[in-house]
Length: 76
Image 1 (cartoon, rainbow, N blue to C red):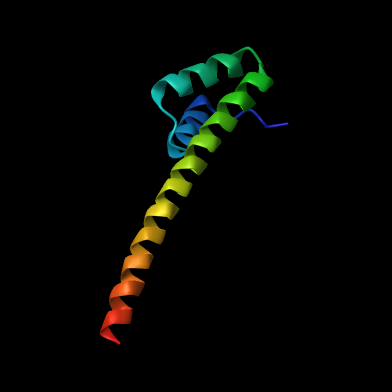
Image 2 (cartoon, helix red, strand yellow):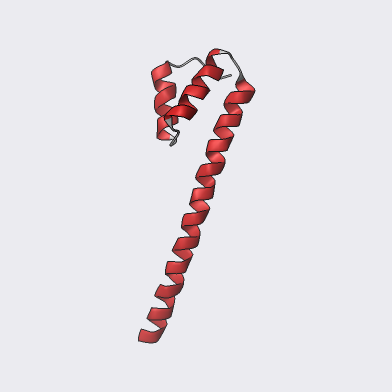
């Protein structure tokens, strides 16, 4: 069980995780009502979104790596 932290600490943690104002407000409403399932749902959705962004960026890096490799092959 998560020990009760200050609301400010919870809000800061959510902000640090990239959560927007609307999501933070929803989380706090569920927090106040002890709706842990809903809290987890919000957190899991945020995590999925962040992971999706990571995968998009990884694809972009792969494209750049390919071009770098091609150019370096031409130089050698």
